[in-house]
Length: 114
Length: 112
Image (cartoon, rainbow over all chains, first blue to last red):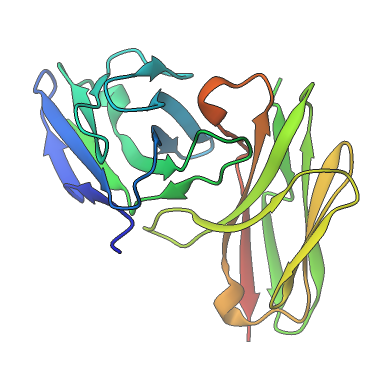
C-alpha cells in the first residue's frame, strides 16, 4: 500500500495562474481532507469530504475549490493563485463512518506563488 | 483564542535527558486527542490517540497521557533520531467530518 500520495511535490506559480493538486489514497478510506501549513500557524483545514461526491468547507476555504469524483481521489484547485496561498499543502484520509478515526497524511505539496 | 496550545515551542535535550511536552486544550466535548510526529519536509506521522482522561499509551521511548484539560508526551532517554516536531490535535464532538484542530507544535532537538 502506498497510503496517501500527493502530486506534484513542488510547484511555482505566478499570481493569477491556476493549478490543481491531486491527492490519492489506496486504503479505501471514506473521509479525505486538505490542510495548509504555514510557519507559526500550525495545520489549518481548507476543505474536506465525507464520501464520494461530497465536499464541505473547513476553517480557511476562500480561494480554493475541491472535488471528490472518485472515492480514492480528492482534488484541490486554485483558480487564481495569490501570494498568500504560498504554503505547504497536506492531504489526509481516514476510514470515517465510525467515531474517533485517525487521519493519515500524505507527504505534502510545496507551493510558491510569485 | 487557540483551542490547542503546545509548550514549549522548542526544546533542546541532550541524549538520555528525559522530558515532557505539553498540550493544553479548551474544547467542550473531546472526541479524541492525537499526537503526530513531523520530520522536516515530510507529512505528519501518527503516533497516538487518547480518548478519555486517565488514558495512557506507550511506544518505544514515548508515552502519552491525558487529563481533562491537557495531554503530556513524555520522552524517556531520548536519542538524536527522536528529533522532530511533535504536533498535538483535538477532535471535537461538534466537528463535522471528524476534523482535527492542531496546535502549533513543539520542535524537539536531541543532541548526542
